[in-house]
Figure (cartoon, rainbow, N blue to C red):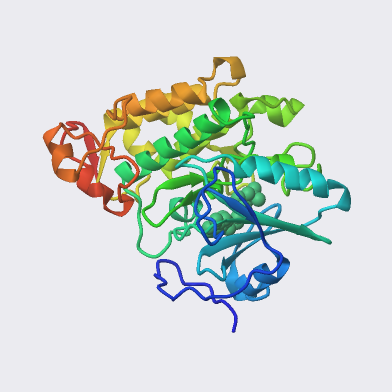
Length: 380
Ligand SMILES: Nc1ncnc2c1ncn2[C@@H]1O[C@H](COP(=O)(O)OP(=O)(O)OP(=O)(O)O)[C@@H](O)[C@H]1O
Ligand SMILES: [Mg+2]
């Protein structure tokens, strides 16, 4: 019997299936496997093809979660009952196999609450699979534009928490991961959301694994149109600043619900900066905020976030803030403070409406954290 993909938002409580794991090697990064050798969240594995075929029901069409530039992503379940997302890469040459395995090992060592955990990989023959944690709420992209999932609408606090968490994940890649990692493809579809809508940046370091020419939208330059820093798009100059630029575009997208590039009726393309700048100059905050946003929008916070987005998207990389600065400016602008504190909804109200609660916070109920602190609000 094969594995069937759950519908979005459904909960699976199947008993894990017992069974052998032929050909499976466990990698212990932080020595955290349990007694049976079954890895937990802090380790990766080299999976067998047999297990991945079983997990995904032979890469069944019904298990398909989405398709990107590098391959197709399938939902699956391991023999231990863990839900996984299997990215089946296309166009891999035998020459890159060793490099691929080494790079995946590096990525497997990177752990942060806002980075998607790598569960493992498979490399053999012409098949290359990247196995990641499954994120039940899929990508931020699904909630920002026309294709809103079910009845879920992100309110202002949820959007801001997603922005802060994503920034923290990228800042970790730039400043703390060893070696430092430049993502090169920051965009809404690479921000995945867990069961509590907490953001996890996906596909970090991934572009580096791929041979030149594989990317869907560009040839030599990897990344996605609309998010590319000008110096990268024109001269292929890569730096942390490229990610900062893309993050600035993402911030505007989160606030406005607009795509980075919109096609006008006459066929011309209009980017989000061309659209936002005149509105910012005229202080038309109401028009900048996504009209599908439910509840209140704090205008003071919106102004801060938009001003930061403009600095992130400065044409000169040297004028852009670092991701560390982005995190602290965002937290400050949103009244979150530099130190992460743990507040319940009740204490948040008592302490003047600070929105943040670390780690265990449930994003599905973020509206509870919003208080009447802001005098200047846009009411939906
Ligand atoms: N770990 C995951 N859990 C749940 N859904 C996922 C996961 N990884 C990817 N997806 C879904 O699959 C889709 C395709 O992902 P994929 O990374 O292949 O493409 P992309 O992000 O659109 O573009 P790119 O190839 O540039 O990363 C995503 O938009 C997301 O909806
Ligand atoms: Mg992706």
